[in-house]
Amino acid sequence: QAFENREKAINLAAAEREKQVRQEQKNAERQAKQPKAQEKENFQQEKHRVEKEHAEKREEQRQRKQQQQHQEFMNETLSKIDTTLETLSNKIGKIDQHHFPEAMAKASELLNKLSLARSSYRKTLSHLNLSSNTFLTDKALAIQTFKADCKQAIDLAKPVLERDLGWGDYLKNLLKTLANAIVFTISIGQAPSFFLLKKPTSLDAVSEAENDLDLKGKKP
Image (cartoon, rainbow, N blue to C red; front, side, top):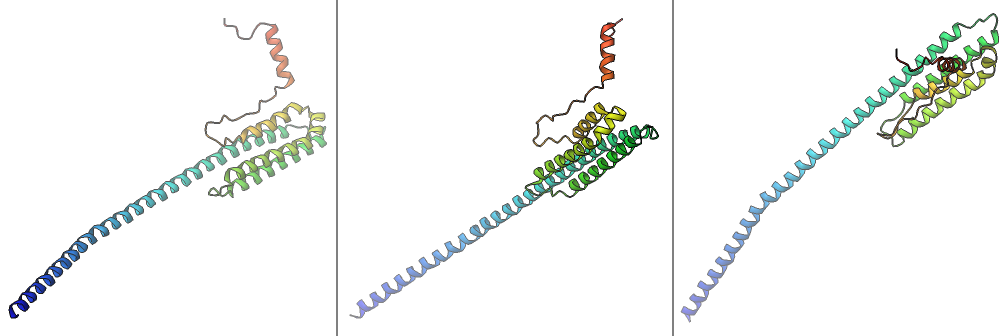
């Protein structure tokens, strides 16, 4: 009986020891897995951080490029408009105001309205939100508004200026020149559509005379 009890105690102790060893092995395996899991989590976090930095940098570069393109567009179009208005101002300076006072007043009024349209156009472009989803639409609207303001001003002045000064063709070309100055291509690769200027009647007469005399296009 004593022998059996002792054997049972030995077996029980052995089983307990085996159970303890298995538990220690499980703990060791669990501890071994933890660094790998942590390492994987750290790697994912670092990857996410780097991707976020790159995305922010790309967005910053895109916004900077868009701002630069918008500023270049403004500078170019406003420069063309200013040149056109300066030409009109010089033309007004040559009007004989004693013989054509009404035409002089109308021409000066036209220049003033076109200058106001130019200022309003510049102000609108300057305040556009480049980050807005409606940026291109807002920009196109500013262009259309400028063209409409110019057309209205020219149409109002045209009857007197055409009657007294013969500015019919000049005013048509003036509107087309202003429209061409603000040509805006929304999508890359889209060809801009320019308005062709109308030749004054006097130039047509010269061309016809050259053809009659067989002077055009001949080499000596």
